[in-house]
Length: 92
Image (tube, rainbow, N blue to C red; front, side, top):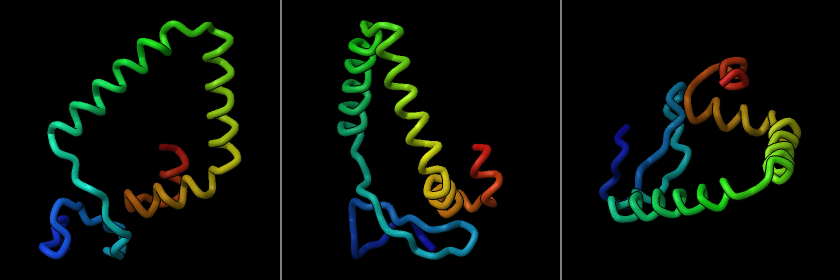
């Protein structure tokens, strides 16, 4: 299967590599859109660098709790996206 589909120009087709099941599509970003996202991330990092240890810890703990609570869903998506077995998806 191809990542490009003439019926949906400007999109990338996504497949589960272990089954070749079509999972959907995502918009292909232009170079300009990628640069804009990188610039936004750089600006966000500047704001993040000004936060206190306590603020960062709170944010990271919240993310950690979310990951732990949703680990099954995260592993399922990682498995479908990468073709890895569940245990490998769990370990990264």
